[in-house]
Length: 320
Image (cartoon, rainbow, N blue to C red; front, top):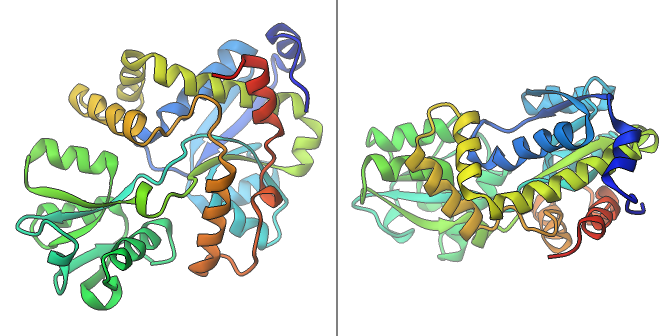
């Protein structure tokens, strides 16, 4: 894929086209970059975007059937769909880092303090949440399955609610959830392991069917350019990022939005200015999915991802 000569040239090829785009993510501040990407795809290139949030399995089915043209999905989930026979490929990335973490509730302040105590993960240990729990405890010489009173709850929201009620000594949380807890009751909780350090996985990618891509390379190029522009906007326009996060995430306070920006942008660097598709992190993610049985087949990153559009977008916009 070669970089376009100008925005006008590319816009002339894609303007007026309609896209069905969906995300399997739960609404939270990590999606702010995604929303900006969609906004730029419409404002800069005149593409009409019909966006919706869907559960993961129905969204993958819709992506495979063509009811959805572009899916905002986890790389691990996309790989599992490909293993099952789907002909999907990632053409760009959105957020990069694993935003899950292990939180302890006072008086517990370390992973060792959680030994023998009630601790919760989400529904299974093979998800990124469960993988992170296992890697965090293993790094401390512990086994989350045998060294805690392990509970499985439906999702991170339920885990956080149980911690708030005092039913749990610790559990899996996420950056945006932890910020809310810390703002409500400062000093009550301690982050004892950060997922982006213990289990640095590539998170969400923009996936399409290979058949669709063969006929829509110009739209994929516009998407990749919009993504890189959104990444750079994130670093350059804190006030606008905070405002967009509040506009899109119901109930997000200005204080929480500011704290999320500091965490996601400054600490995690979730929107790198030269592209969120990181090959080293991509290979690590796929190897970890194989390690935990999410995948049965060994994939290389290049089996599932094309970096051509990201490279062309950076060439077009200029590297920073």
